[in-house]
Image (cartoon, rainbow over all chains, first blue to last red; front, side, top):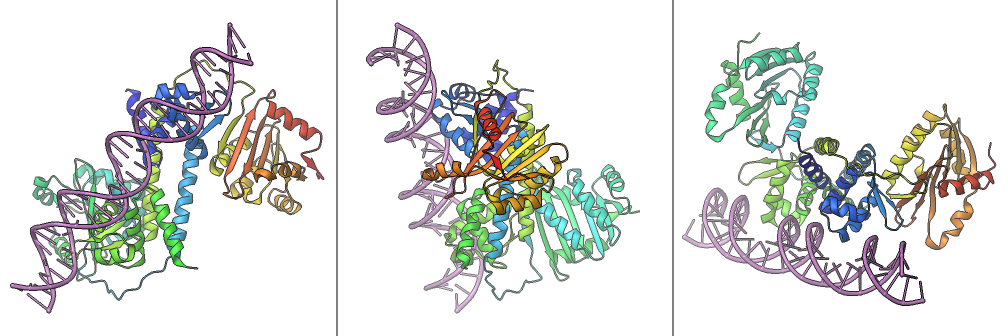
Length: 264
Length: 264
DNA sequence: TGATGAATTCACTCAGATAATCACAAACAA
DNA sequence: TTGTTTGTGATTATCTGAGTGAATTCATCA
Protein backbone atom coordinates (compact mmCIF):
# COMPACT_ATOMS: atom_id res chain seq x y z
CA UNK A 1 0.00 0.00 0.00
CA UNK A 2 1.23 3.43 -0.84
CA UNK A 3 1.95 5.69 2.04
CA UNK A 4 0.63 8.68 0.17
CA UNK A 5 -2.95 7.84 0.98
CA UNK A 6 -2.37 7.57 4.67
CA UNK A 7 -0.53 10.86 4.58
CA UNK A 8 -3.57 12.46 2.99
CA UNK A 9 -5.74 10.79 5.57
CA UNK A 10 -3.67 12.14 8.39
CA UNK A 11 -3.79 15.64 6.94
CA UNK A 12 -7.55 15.44 6.53
CA UNK A 13 -8.12 14.23 10.06
CA UNK A 14 -5.85 16.88 11.50
CA UNK A 15 -7.85 19.51 9.68
CA UNK A 16 -11.04 18.06 11.08
CA UNK A 17 -9.41 18.37 14.46
CA UNK A 18 -9.05 22.08 13.86
CA UNK A 19 -5.67 22.56 12.20
CA UNK A 20 -5.25 24.59 9.02
CA UNK A 21 -3.99 22.92 5.87
CA UNK A 22 -0.44 24.20 6.24
CA UNK A 23 -0.34 23.29 9.89
CA UNK A 24 -1.59 19.79 9.22
CA UNK A 25 0.89 19.29 6.39
CA UNK A 26 3.77 20.55 8.45
CA UNK A 27 2.91 18.31 11.37
CA UNK A 28 2.64 15.24 9.19
CA UNK A 29 5.87 16.22 7.50
CA UNK A 30 7.59 16.50 10.85
CA UNK A 31 6.41 13.08 11.93
CA UNK A 32 8.31 11.72 8.94
CA UNK A 33 11.66 13.22 9.83
CA UNK A 34 13.41 13.18 13.14
CA UNK A 35 14.05 16.87 12.82
CA UNK A 36 13.86 19.42 10.05
CA UNK A 37 14.43 22.98 8.98
CA UNK A 38 11.93 25.21 7.26
CA UNK A 39 13.52 24.49 3.93
CA UNK A 40 13.40 20.73 4.33
CA UNK A 41 9.86 20.86 5.55
CA UNK A 42 8.82 22.97 2.63
CA UNK A 43 10.28 20.43 0.24
CA UNK A 44 8.59 17.49 1.91
CA UNK A 45 5.20 19.05 2.40
CA UNK A 46 4.75 21.44 -0.53
CA UNK A 47 4.03 24.19 1.95
CA UNK A 48 5.61 27.46 0.76
CA UNK A 49 8.80 27.92 2.66
CA UNK A 50 7.78 31.34 3.85
CA UNK A 51 4.64 29.98 5.46
CA UNK A 52 6.24 27.11 7.29
CA UNK A 53 7.19 29.49 10.05
CA UNK A 54 3.64 30.61 10.74
CA UNK A 55 2.33 27.08 10.67
CA UNK A 56 4.99 25.75 12.99
CA UNK A 57 4.50 28.66 15.36
CA UNK A 58 0.87 27.71 15.78
CA UNK A 59 1.75 24.07 16.25
CA UNK A 60 4.32 25.00 18.83
CA UNK A 61 1.78 27.06 20.74
CA UNK A 62 -0.46 24.01 20.86
CA UNK A 63 2.32 21.80 22.13
CA UNK A 64 2.44 19.66 19.02
CA UNK A 65 5.92 20.51 17.83
CA UNK A 66 9.11 21.64 19.45
CA UNK A 67 11.31 24.41 18.16
CA UNK A 68 15.03 24.80 18.45
CA UNK A 69 15.73 28.52 18.38
CA UNK A 70 18.98 28.27 16.51
CA UNK A 71 19.77 29.62 13.12
CA UNK A 72 18.39 28.15 11.07
CA UNK A 73 15.60 27.07 13.38
CA UNK A 74 15.00 23.37 13.66
CA UNK A 75 11.63 21.78 14.27
CA UNK A 76 10.53 18.39 15.40
CA UNK A 77 7.21 16.81 16.14
CA UNK A 78 6.25 15.70 19.58
CA UNK A 79 6.00 11.88 19.85
CA UNK A 80 2.68 10.59 18.56
CA UNK A 81 1.38 9.45 21.93
CA UNK A 82 2.15 12.81 23.43
CA UNK A 83 0.43 14.56 20.57
CA UNK A 84 -2.76 12.56 20.84
CA UNK A 85 -2.70 12.98 24.58
CA UNK A 86 -2.40 16.73 24.13
CA UNK A 87 -5.28 16.75 21.68
CA UNK A 88 -7.33 14.67 24.07
CA UNK A 89 -6.72 17.10 26.90
CA UNK A 90 -7.70 19.95 24.61
CA UNK A 91 -10.90 18.18 23.69
CA UNK A 92 -11.74 17.30 27.26
CA UNK A 93 -11.20 20.88 28.26
CA UNK A 94 -13.62 22.03 25.62
CA UNK A 95 -16.28 19.56 26.61
CA UNK A 96 -15.97 20.64 30.21
CA UNK A 97 -16.32 24.28 29.29
CA UNK A 98 -19.28 23.44 27.09
CA UNK A 99 -21.20 21.56 29.74
CA UNK A 100 -20.35 24.25 32.22
CA UNK A 101 -21.60 27.02 29.99
CA UNK A 102 -24.72 25.19 28.93
CA UNK A 103 -25.68 24.31 32.45
CA UNK A 104 -25.50 27.97 33.34
CA UNK A 105 -27.71 29.19 30.55
CA UNK A 106 -31.29 29.86 31.51
CA UNK A 107 -33.99 27.74 30.02
CA UNK A 108 -36.93 29.46 28.45
CA UNK A 109 -39.97 27.68 29.75
CA UNK A 110 -42.69 27.68 27.20
CA UNK A 111 -46.07 26.14 27.75
CA UNK A 112 -45.57 23.26 25.40
CA UNK A 113 -46.87 19.83 26.12
CA UNK A 114 -45.38 17.03 24.09
CA UNK A 115 -47.96 15.60 21.78
CA UNK A 116 -48.18 11.85 21.80
CA UNK A 117 -48.24 11.88 18.06
CA UNK A 118 -44.74 13.23 17.76
CA UNK A 119 -42.31 11.52 15.49
CA UNK A 120 -38.77 12.76 15.55
CA UNK A 121 -35.90 12.22 13.17
CA UNK A 122 -32.17 12.13 13.70
CA UNK A 123 -29.13 11.08 11.69
CA UNK A 124 -25.59 9.97 12.31
CA UNK A 125 -24.60 6.57 13.61
CA UNK A 126 -23.01 7.98 16.77
CA UNK A 127 -26.07 9.92 17.80
CA UNK A 128 -28.43 7.10 16.97
CA UNK A 129 -26.27 4.66 18.88
CA UNK A 130 -26.41 6.94 21.91
CA UNK A 131 -30.14 7.23 21.72
CA UNK A 132 -30.41 3.47 21.38
CA UNK A 133 -28.23 3.10 24.44
CA UNK A 134 -30.49 5.40 26.42
CA UNK A 135 -33.65 3.61 25.34
CA UNK A 136 -32.23 0.26 26.36
CA UNK A 137 -31.13 1.71 29.66
CA UNK A 138 -34.59 3.02 30.40
CA UNK A 139 -36.44 -0.15 29.51
CA UNK A 140 -38.75 -1.52 32.19
CA UNK A 141 -40.22 -4.74 30.84
CA UNK A 142 -39.38 -5.63 27.31
CA UNK A 143 -36.92 -4.87 24.57
CA UNK A 144 -37.67 -5.95 21.04
CA UNK A 145 -34.85 -5.41 18.65
CA UNK A 146 -34.40 -6.19 14.99
CA UNK A 147 -30.97 -5.86 13.45
CA UNK A 148 -30.51 -5.49 9.74
CA UNK A 149 -26.76 -5.16 9.61
CA UNK A 150 -24.03 -6.87 11.57
CA UNK A 151 -21.96 -3.69 11.64
CA UNK A 152 -24.41 -2.40 14.23
CA UNK A 153 -23.66 -5.22 16.66
CA UNK A 154 -20.94 -3.26 18.42
CA UNK A 155 -19.28 -4.27 21.66
CA UNK A 156 -20.97 -1.47 23.51
CA UNK A 157 -24.34 -2.49 22.15
CA UNK A 158 -23.80 -6.08 23.22
CA UNK A 159 -22.73 -4.98 26.67
CA UNK A 160 -25.82 -2.84 27.05
CA UNK A 161 -28.09 -5.66 26.04
CA UNK A 162 -26.45 -8.19 28.31
CA UNK A 163 -26.65 -5.75 31.18
CA UNK A 164 -30.42 -5.55 30.82
CA UNK A 165 -31.07 -9.16 29.85
CA UNK A 166 -31.49 -10.05 33.51
CA UNK A 167 -34.18 -7.50 34.28
CA UNK A 168 -36.23 -7.33 31.14
CA UNK A 169 -37.29 -9.60 28.32
CA UNK A 170 -34.98 -9.16 25.37
CA UNK A 171 -36.11 -10.34 21.96
CA UNK A 172 -33.69 -9.89 19.13
CA UNK A 173 -34.44 -10.45 15.50
CA UNK A 174 -31.76 -10.69 12.87
CA UNK A 175 -31.98 -10.11 9.16
CA UNK A 176 -30.27 -13.37 8.33
CA UNK A 177 -29.77 -16.72 9.98
CA UNK A 178 -26.03 -16.18 10.24
CA UNK A 179 -26.48 -12.84 11.93
CA UNK A 180 -28.89 -14.52 14.29
CA UNK A 181 -26.22 -17.00 15.26
CA UNK A 182 -23.88 -14.12 16.00
CA UNK A 183 -26.52 -12.53 18.19
CA UNK A 184 -27.18 -15.75 20.07
CA UNK A 185 -23.52 -16.08 20.85
CA UNK A 186 -23.18 -12.48 21.94
CA UNK A 187 -26.37 -12.20 23.98
CA UNK A 188 -27.09 -15.73 25.17
CA UNK A 189 -30.00 -14.90 27.47
CA UNK A 190 -31.99 -13.16 24.79
CA UNK A 191 -34.65 -14.76 22.67
CA UNK A 192 -33.58 -14.60 19.06
CA UNK A 193 -35.45 -14.96 15.83
CA UNK A 194 -35.03 -14.28 12.16
CA UNK A 195 -36.66 -11.00 11.30
CA UNK A 196 -39.69 -10.98 9.05
CA UNK A 197 -38.76 -7.65 7.62
CA UNK A 198 -37.33 -8.77 4.31
CA UNK A 199 -40.39 -7.37 2.62
CA UNK A 200 -39.63 -3.94 4.01
CA UNK A 201 -36.22 -4.02 2.55
CA UNK A 202 -37.57 -5.28 -0.72
CA UNK A 203 -40.05 -2.45 -0.87
CA UNK A 204 -37.36 0.14 -0.53
CA UNK A 205 -34.95 -1.31 -3.02
CA UNK A 206 -35.75 1.50 -5.39
CA UNK A 207 -34.39 4.03 -2.95
CA UNK A 208 -31.53 1.77 -2.11
CA UNK A 209 -32.15 1.64 1.60
CA UNK A 210 -31.47 -1.05 4.13
CA UNK A 211 -33.07 -1.51 7.51
CA UNK A 212 -30.55 -0.65 10.19
CA UNK A 213 -32.14 -1.24 13.55
CA UNK A 214 -35.63 -1.42 14.86
CA UNK A 215 -36.04 -1.03 18.58
CA UNK A 216 -39.32 -1.29 20.46
CA UNK A 217 -39.07 -0.69 24.19
CA UNK A 218 -41.91 -1.56 26.55
CA UNK A 219 -44.23 -1.39 23.57
CA UNK A 220 -44.28 2.36 24.02
CA UNK A 221 -41.08 3.73 22.54
CA UNK A 222 -39.78 2.93 19.12
CA UNK A 223 -36.75 3.70 17.03
CA UNK A 224 -36.31 2.66 13.42
CA UNK A 225 -33.22 3.38 11.42
CA UNK A 226 -32.25 2.90 7.82
CA UNK A 227 -28.81 2.82 6.29
CA UNK A 228 -27.85 4.27 2.95
CA UNK A 229 -25.58 1.55 1.62
CA UNK A 230 -23.61 3.87 -0.62
CA UNK A 231 -22.45 6.23 2.09
CA UNK A 232 -23.09 4.26 5.26
CA UNK A 233 -25.16 7.12 6.64
CA UNK A 234 -27.72 6.06 9.19
CA UNK A 235 -31.05 7.86 9.54
CA UNK A 236 -33.53 7.17 12.30
CA UNK A 237 -37.03 8.09 13.32
CA UNK A 238 -38.46 7.48 16.73
CA UNK A 239 -41.42 8.25 18.88
CA UNK A 240 -43.06 7.25 22.11
CA UNK A 241 -46.43 6.96 23.81
CA UNK A 242 -49.02 4.28 23.42
CA UNK A 243 -51.12 6.53 21.25
CA UNK A 244 -48.30 7.17 18.85
CA UNK A 245 -49.07 6.06 15.35
CA UNK A 246 -45.66 4.56 14.82
CA UNK A 247 -46.02 2.51 17.97
CA UNK A 248 -49.47 1.34 17.06
CA UNK A 249 -48.27 0.14 13.72
CA UNK A 250 -45.29 -1.70 15.10
CA UNK A 251 -47.38 -3.30 17.84
CA UNK A 252 -49.73 -4.55 15.22
CA UNK A 253 -46.86 -5.87 13.13
CA UNK A 254 -45.56 -7.64 16.17
CA UNK A 255 -48.89 -9.18 17.14
CA UNK A 256 -49.38 -10.47 13.64
CA UNK A 257 -46.10 -12.25 13.75
CA UNK A 258 -44.67 -10.26 10.92
CA UNK A 259 -41.79 -8.97 12.94
CA UNK A 260 -40.63 -12.30 14.19
CA UNK A 261 -40.93 -15.91 13.30
CA UNK A 262 -38.90 -19.03 14.03
CA UNK A 263 -38.45 -17.66 17.50
CA UNK A 264 -36.89 -19.86 20.09
CA UNK B 1 -24.31 36.37 37.02
CA UNK B 2 -25.78 37.05 33.67
CA UNK B 3 -26.46 34.08 31.51
CA UNK B 4 -25.42 35.96 28.42
CA UNK B 5 -21.76 35.31 29.03
CA UNK B 6 -22.15 31.60 29.38
CA UNK B 7 -24.20 31.53 26.22
CA UNK B 8 -21.37 33.24 24.39
CA UNK B 9 -18.96 30.78 25.95
CA UNK B 10 -21.00 27.85 24.78
CA UNK B 11 -21.18 29.25 21.26
CA UNK B 12 -17.44 29.83 21.20
CA UNK B 13 -16.63 26.35 22.41
CA UNK B 14 -18.99 24.76 19.95
CA UNK B 15 -17.26 26.64 17.16
CA UNK B 16 -13.92 25.41 18.41
CA UNK B 17 -15.41 21.94 18.25
CA UNK B 18 -16.05 22.47 14.56
CA UNK B 19 -19.53 23.96 14.30
CA UNK B 20 -20.26 27.08 12.25
CA UNK B 21 -21.52 30.18 13.94
CA UNK B 22 -25.14 29.65 12.95
CA UNK B 23 -25.01 26.00 13.91
CA UNK B 24 -23.56 26.80 17.31
CA UNK B 25 -26.13 29.52 17.93
CA UNK B 26 -28.98 27.28 16.92
CA UNK B 27 -27.81 24.47 19.12
CA UNK B 28 -27.45 26.70 22.14
CA UNK B 29 -30.83 28.21 21.37
CA UNK B 30 -32.38 24.78 21.26
CA UNK B 31 -30.92 23.82 24.60
CA UNK B 32 -32.88 26.72 26.06
CA UNK B 33 -36.26 25.64 24.81
CA UNK B 34 -37.83 22.24 25.04
CA UNK B 35 -38.75 22.47 21.42
CA UNK B 36 -38.91 25.22 18.84
CA UNK B 37 -39.78 26.21 15.31
CA UNK B 38 -37.52 27.98 12.89
CA UNK B 39 -39.19 31.27 13.66
CA UNK B 40 -38.82 30.93 17.41
CA UNK B 41 -35.21 29.87 17.03
CA UNK B 42 -34.49 32.81 14.80
CA UNK B 43 -35.89 35.19 17.40
CA UNK B 44 -33.90 33.64 20.22
CA UNK B 45 -30.62 33.30 18.42
CA UNK B 46 -30.51 36.20 15.97
CA UNK B 47 -29.86 33.72 13.22
CA UNK B 48 -31.77 34.73 10.08
CA UNK B 49 -34.85 32.59 9.93
CA UNK B 50 -34.14 31.42 6.42
CA UNK B 51 -30.76 30.09 7.55
CA UNK B 52 -32.04 28.21 10.55
CA UNK B 53 -33.07 25.37 8.30
CA UNK B 54 -29.57 24.84 6.92
CA UNK B 55 -27.96 25.04 10.32
CA UNK B 56 -30.38 22.61 11.89
CA UNK B 57 -30.00 20.21 8.98
CA UNK B 58 -26.28 20.00 9.65
CA UNK B 59 -26.84 19.54 13.36
CA UNK B 60 -29.34 16.81 12.65
CA UNK B 61 -26.86 15.01 10.43
CA UNK B 62 -24.39 15.05 13.31
CA UNK B 63 -26.93 13.65 15.73
CA UNK B 64 -27.06 16.80 17.84
CA UNK B 65 -30.65 17.80 17.24
CA UNK B 66 -33.84 16.00 16.38
CA UNK B 67 -36.31 17.14 13.77
CA UNK B 68 -40.03 16.66 13.71
CA UNK B 69 -41.05 16.64 10.06
CA UNK B 70 -44.38 18.32 10.58
CA UNK B 71 -45.56 21.65 9.31
CA UNK B 72 -44.09 23.77 10.58
CA UNK B 73 -41.08 21.66 11.42
CA UNK B 74 -40.15 21.48 15.06
CA UNK B 75 -36.64 21.06 16.37
CA UNK B 76 -35.22 20.03 19.68
CA UNK B 77 -31.75 19.48 21.01
CA UNK B 78 -30.55 16.11 22.06
CA UNK B 79 -30.00 15.89 25.86
CA UNK B 80 -26.68 17.36 26.89
CA UNK B 81 -25.12 14.09 27.97
CA UNK B 82 -26.05 12.50 24.70
CA UNK B 83 -24.61 15.41 22.79
CA UNK B 84 -21.29 15.31 24.58
CA UNK B 85 -21.17 11.57 24.20
CA UNK B 86 -21.73 11.94 20.48
CA UNK B 87 -19.00 14.52 20.25
CA UNK B 88 -16.70 12.27 22.25
CA UNK B 89 -17.30 9.39 19.89
CA UNK B 90 -16.58 11.67 16.96
CA UNK B 91 -13.35 12.79 18.54
CA UNK B 92 -12.26 9.28 19.42
CA UNK B 93 -12.93 8.19 15.89
CA UNK B 94 -10.72 10.95 14.56
CA UNK B 95 -7.88 10.16 16.93
CA UNK B 96 -8.02 6.52 15.93
CA UNK B 97 -7.89 7.40 12.26
CA UNK B 98 -5.04 9.79 12.93
CA UNK B 99 -2.85 7.30 14.75
CA UNK B 100 -3.65 4.72 12.13
CA UNK B 101 -2.67 6.98 9.29
CA UNK B 102 0.45 8.29 10.96
CA UNK B 103 1.68 4.84 11.85
CA UNK B 104 1.41 3.91 8.21
CA UNK B 105 3.37 6.81 6.84
CA UNK B 106 6.95 6.11 6.01
CA UNK B 107 9.66 7.82 7.95
CA UNK B 108 12.38 9.59 6.07
CA UNK B 109 15.62 8.57 7.70
CA UNK B 110 18.13 11.32 7.51
CA UNK B 111 21.61 11.08 8.85
CA UNK B 112 21.12 13.44 11.73
CA UNK B 113 22.69 12.91 15.07
CA UNK B 114 21.17 14.82 17.92
CA UNK B 115 23.62 17.35 19.19
CA UNK B 116 24.02 17.38 22.92
CA UNK B 117 23.80 21.12 22.87
CA UNK B 118 20.23 21.15 21.67
CA UNK B 119 17.70 23.23 23.49
CA UNK B 120 14.12 22.87 22.43
CA UNK B 121 11.09 25.03 23.10
CA UNK B 122 7.43 24.23 23.37
CA UNK B 123 4.32 26.03 24.56
CA UNK B 124 0.89 25.15 25.87
CA UNK B 125 0.18 23.82 29.31
CA UNK B 126 -1.23 20.54 28.02
CA UNK B 127 1.79 19.72 25.92
CA UNK B 128 4.22 20.76 28.63
CA UNK B 129 2.33 18.70 31.18
CA UNK B 130 2.57 15.68 28.92
CA UNK B 131 6.26 16.13 28.45
CA UNK B 132 6.70 16.54 32.18
CA UNK B 133 4.80 13.33 32.68
CA UNK B 134 7.07 11.50 30.30
CA UNK B 135 10.21 12.81 31.90
CA UNK B 136 9.05 11.75 35.33
CA UNK B 137 8.14 8.36 33.95
CA UNK B 138 11.58 7.86 32.46
CA UNK B 139 13.52 8.92 35.54
CA UNK B 140 16.07 6.42 36.80
CA UNK B 141 17.60 7.91 39.92
CA UNK B 142 16.54 11.39 40.85
CA UNK B 143 13.86 13.94 40.19
CA UNK B 144 14.39 17.52 41.20
CA UNK B 145 11.37 19.69 40.78
CA UNK B 146 10.68 23.32 41.55
CA UNK B 147 7.13 24.60 41.37
CA UNK B 148 6.38 28.26 40.98
CA UNK B 149 2.62 28.12 40.86
CA UNK B 150 0.14 25.98 42.73
CA UNK B 151 -2.07 25.71 39.65
CA UNK B 152 0.49 23.30 38.26
CA UNK B 153 0.08 20.86 41.13
CA UNK B 154 -2.61 18.88 39.35
CA UNK B 155 -3.95 15.53 40.45
CA UNK B 156 -2.27 13.77 37.59
CA UNK B 157 1.02 15.39 38.44
CA UNK B 158 0.75 14.32 42.06
CA UNK B 159 -0.12 10.78 41.05
CA UNK B 160 2.88 10.62 38.73
CA UNK B 161 5.21 11.83 41.44
CA UNK B 162 3.89 9.45 44.07
CA UNK B 163 4.18 6.58 41.64
CA UNK B 164 7.89 7.21 41.26
CA UNK B 165 8.64 8.28 44.79
CA UNK B 166 9.36 4.66 45.69
CA UNK B 167 11.99 4.05 43.02
CA UNK B 168 13.78 7.34 42.72
CA UNK B 169 14.75 10.27 44.90
CA UNK B 170 12.21 13.02 44.59
CA UNK B 171 13.12 16.52 45.67
CA UNK B 172 10.48 19.17 45.32
CA UNK B 173 10.98 22.87 45.79
CA UNK B 174 8.12 25.29 46.14
CA UNK B 175 8.04 29.00 45.53
CA UNK B 176 6.44 29.74 48.88
CA UNK B 177 6.25 28.09 52.25
CA UNK B 178 2.51 27.55 51.91
CA UNK B 179 2.92 25.85 48.55
CA UNK B 180 5.59 23.71 50.12
CA UNK B 181 3.12 22.57 52.77
CA UNK B 182 0.71 21.61 50.03
CA UNK B 183 3.41 19.61 48.32
CA UNK B 184 4.38 17.84 51.51
CA UNK B 185 0.81 16.77 52.03
CA UNK B 186 0.37 15.62 48.46
CA UNK B 187 3.68 13.82 48.02
CA UNK B 188 4.67 12.74 51.54
CA UNK B 189 7.69 10.65 50.59
CA UNK B 190 9.39 13.45 48.72
CA UNK B 191 11.96 15.79 50.16
CA UNK B 192 10.60 19.29 50.02
CA UNK B 193 12.24 22.68 50.25
CA UNK B 194 11.52 26.29 49.56
CA UNK B 195 12.90 27.23 46.22
CA UNK B 196 15.72 29.67 45.96
CA UNK B 197 14.54 31.01 42.69
CA UNK B 198 12.93 34.21 43.85
CA UNK B 199 15.76 36.14 42.30
CA UNK B 200 14.96 34.66 38.92
CA UNK B 201 11.43 35.83 39.18
CA UNK B 202 12.58 39.21 40.33
CA UNK B 203 14.90 39.54 37.39
CA UNK B 204 12.12 38.96 34.93
CA UNK B 205 9.62 41.28 36.48
CA UNK B 206 10.08 43.69 33.62
CA UNK B 207 8.78 41.11 31.19
CA UNK B 208 6.13 40.08 33.63
CA UNK B 209 7.02 36.42 33.73
CA UNK B 210 6.69 33.89 36.48
CA UNK B 211 8.56 30.64 36.88
CA UNK B 212 6.22 27.75 36.17
CA UNK B 213 8.08 24.52 36.72
CA UNK B 214 11.66 23.47 36.74
CA UNK B 215 12.33 19.79 36.37
CA UNK B 216 15.75 18.16 36.46
CA UNK B 217 15.76 14.41 35.90
CA UNK B 218 18.81 12.28 36.64
CA UNK B 219 20.89 15.44 36.32
CA UNK B 220 20.78 14.94 32.57
CA UNK B 221 17.40 16.17 31.38
CA UNK B 222 15.88 19.49 32.21
CA UNK B 223 12.67 21.34 31.58
CA UNK B 224 12.02 24.91 32.62
CA UNK B 225 8.75 26.67 32.05
CA UNK B 226 7.53 30.20 32.52
CA UNK B 227 4.00 31.49 32.76
CA UNK B 228 2.71 34.74 31.34
CA UNK B 229 0.47 35.92 34.15
CA UNK B 230 -1.76 37.99 31.90
CA UNK B 231 -2.82 35.16 29.64
CA UNK B 232 -1.85 32.09 31.60
CA UNK B 233 0.19 30.81 28.67
CA UNK B 234 2.98 28.49 29.62
CA UNK B 235 6.23 28.34 27.67
CA UNK B 236 8.93 25.78 28.24
CA UNK B 237 12.45 25.00 27.17
CA UNK B 238 14.16 21.71 27.72
CA UNK B 239 17.24 19.78 26.83
CA UNK B 240 19.16 16.70 27.75
CA UNK B 241 22.64 15.27 27.89
CA UNK B 242 25.36 15.88 30.42
CA UNK B 243 27.15 18.19 28.03
CA UNK B 244 24.14 20.36 27.54
CA UNK B 245 24.69 23.93 28.58
CA UNK B 246 21.34 24.20 30.26
CA UNK B 247 22.06 21.12 32.30
CA UNK B 248 25.47 22.29 33.29
CA UNK B 249 24.08 25.57 34.51
CA UNK B 250 21.31 23.99 36.51
CA UNK B 251 23.66 21.41 38.02
CA UNK B 252 25.87 24.22 39.13
CA UNK B 253 22.94 26.12 40.57
CA UNK B 254 21.94 23.02 42.43
CA UNK B 255 25.36 22.31 43.82
CA UNK B 256 25.71 25.86 45.04
CA UNK B 257 22.51 25.54 46.97
CA UNK B 258 20.77 28.23 45.00
CA UNK B 259 18.00 25.99 43.89
CA UNK B 260 17.13 24.70 47.28
CA UNK B 261 17.52 25.63 50.86
CA UNK B 262 15.73 24.77 54.06
CA UNK B 263 15.49 21.25 52.75
CA UNK B 264 14.26 18.59 55.09
C1' DT C 1 34.18 45.07 7.34
C1' DG C 2 31.56 44.46 3.54
C1' DA C 3 29.51 41.26 0.22
C1' DT C 4 26.79 37.32 -0.76
C1' DG C 5 23.35 34.15 -0.16
C1' DA C 6 20.32 31.93 2.93
C1' DA C 7 16.81 32.48 6.53
C1' DT C 8 12.99 34.86 8.28
C1' DT C 9 9.44 38.14 8.52
C1' DC C 10 6.04 41.15 6.54
C1' DA C 11 2.63 42.89 3.40
C1' DC C 12 -0.31 41.84 -0.18
C1' DT C 13 -3.43 39.32 -3.68
C1' DC C 14 -6.66 35.96 -4.78
C1' DA C 15 -10.04 32.31 -4.03
C1' DG C 16 -13.16 29.81 -1.41
C1' DA C 17 -16.03 29.58 2.51
C1' DT C 18 -19.37 31.62 5.29
C1' DA C 19 -22.38 35.18 6.97
C1' DA C 20 -26.21 37.97 5.60
C1' DT C 21 -30.06 39.54 2.54
C1' DC C 22 -33.50 39.02 -0.87
C1' DA C 23 -36.88 36.98 -3.96
C1' DC C 24 -40.17 33.60 -4.47
C1' DA C 25 -43.17 29.42 -4.27
C1' DA C 26 -45.95 26.49 -1.31
C1' DA C 27 -48.81 25.84 2.57
C1' DC C 28 -51.96 27.69 5.68
C1' DA C 29 -55.51 30.78 8.13
C1' DA C 30 -58.89 34.02 8.10
C1' DT D 1 -60.22 35.17 -2.03
C1' DT D 2 -56.45 37.84 0.85
C1' DG D 3 -52.86 37.96 3.70
C1' DT D 4 -49.53 35.45 6.61
C1' DT D 5 -46.32 31.89 7.62
C1' DT D 6 -43.12 28.44 6.14
C1' DG D 7 -39.60 26.73 3.50
C1' DT D 8 -36.19 26.78 -0.66
C1' DG D 9 -33.09 28.85 -3.69
C1' DA D 10 -30.40 32.51 -5.55
C1' DT D 11 -27.51 36.52 -4.65
C1' DT D 12 -24.40 39.65 -2.40
C1' DA D 13 -21.13 40.96 1.08
C1' DT D 14 -17.60 39.73 4.34
C1' DC D 15 -14.06 37.17 6.15
C1' DT D 16 -10.61 33.64 6.46
C1' DG D 17 -6.99 31.21 4.65
C1' DA D 18 -3.99 29.76 0.73
C1' DG D 19 -0.52 31.35 -2.07
C1' DT D 20 3.25 34.91 -3.73
C1' DG D 21 6.78 38.28 -3.63
C1' DA D 22 9.30 42.07 -1.47
C1' DA D 23 11.89 43.64 2.54
C1' DT D 24 14.63 42.58 6.47
C1' DT D 25 17.65 40.01 9.27
C1' DC D 26 21.24 36.79 9.84
C1' DA D 27 25.39 33.79 8.94
C1' DT D 28 29.42 33.06 6.36
C1' DC D 29 33.35 34.04 3.88
C1' DA D 30 36.34 36.92 1.62
